[in-house]
Length: 119
Image (cartoon, rainbow, N blue to C red; front, side, top):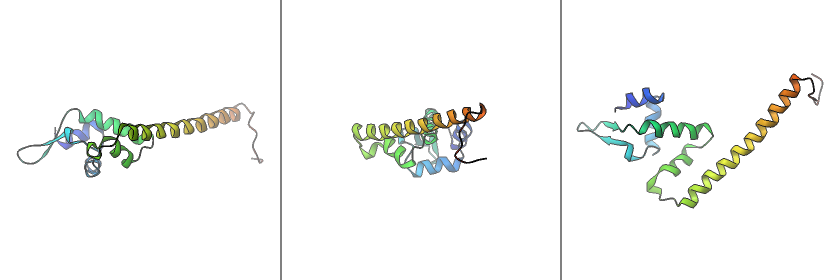
């Protein structure tokens, strides 16, 4: 499929897809060239790009994602595991802060919140 079809199916602008290509986020196995040298994307690219969006939504950087998907870097599984484990630890910390905030807001609704200063 052509890039405009990928854009429609994923909801990603064409400029974002081109950016991902420049940053080597899209592995070659998802992109071929036709006789006119146009990019032709495999059907699997849609699921892959949805996975990339999911990683970005949990604060993976473009560089971290590139390190995970770029086969030419030849990163060991230990390095990839470390990257993912670090991100899981960061998400656990964020989740703890969110739970604390959620509890505080519930206390506000119930009139139990103790503010440091008068509102």
